[in-house]
Image (cartoon, rainbow, N blue to C red; front, side):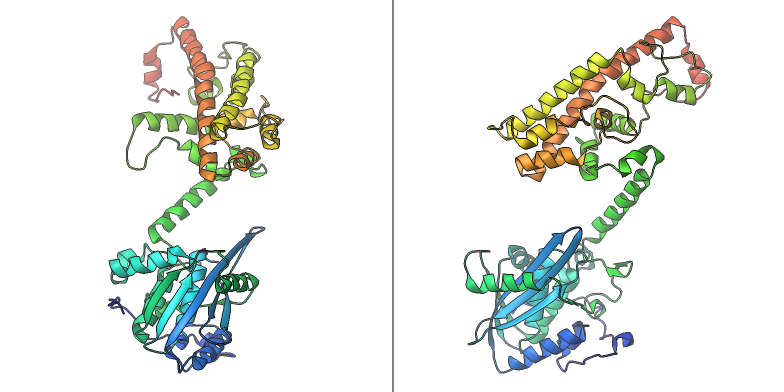
Length: 462
């Protein structure tokens, strides 16, 4: 038995009178204190009564989580095996902040609720994460520190587990079982959990545990690292604002790998070190993505007194819009060479990851023969090479690469190198030469710098 210190702010049991209809009051304090569902209170109470004259228990526990068609289901199960006929229990698990660890933990908690005081309990589980976290929370005495509690996943469930162990004075010992190792009991409990993914979900009274007031969002308990959760919400709101910009209307109906798109956008940036080089590069890529390069069309809008409508493309004398930068007839040969080089880069990066890569692999062919992503055209409905230049990653590209390398991190690295290569090529072969021509034209027209300064506006540069 471990000495555990608990927060001082534990409050008395709370009864929600809206749940009294068809309710069942368990005579066992811990079951009544923490379980909301009458059906599970009845079942666990019955099991506890069957165990009342015993002091040694051996439980096999497991949790199962299934993601299918955008919907997640989860369940927990346990088997007590020190009887002629093993005792079984299963329950559905709420999918809020779901993980296999949460499902496994609920299985362990419901098992411990059924054993009498001073029992010796052996838990056999294939979840190393549960075992490691249990030891960590004891060694660090996490439950004594509110700050640490708010950083811990499923902390309210861990509190319930420790409260059961402490109140019942249990001797609890975990045993790691190798998954799918032909252990009959472990295989059986795994099967039970998978068979009950659609069962009624067990509900816990969190307010009777760790918190006086539990942190919630839209009436859902926040069961993850609180500060990271708030950061994620901020990122989601920022993405929503970006996604709803009129300039991004076409991407709402296209398959874009948004996570990878923004990961590549921040490539080279560090959360701990400020680098002028990486910050400058990221700023350029953001301008590119938002179509806010200082093209002549952009400058005519911002500084019409300097750049009037007589300023046109230095190569073909057509209006210089963002799309025209890439589709100008005088640059098509350069753009085509960049497209050809891009095809080669993607194969080269894949070949480094897969030395035995075959050019006739169906996923390689799907990448190389994609009629859209290699198309040098401006389209309001189709994904084209211009969108790759802007930094958007199509789901089809990330999917095909992932199918080849079977590793998400490696997929991210390959696409990151690929998009950086495109950016460098566009910068060196298209944008910087174009800027040089504009500067040359300004010098020929004796466009004085003091005229720009007089406008009190910043000179845009890329």
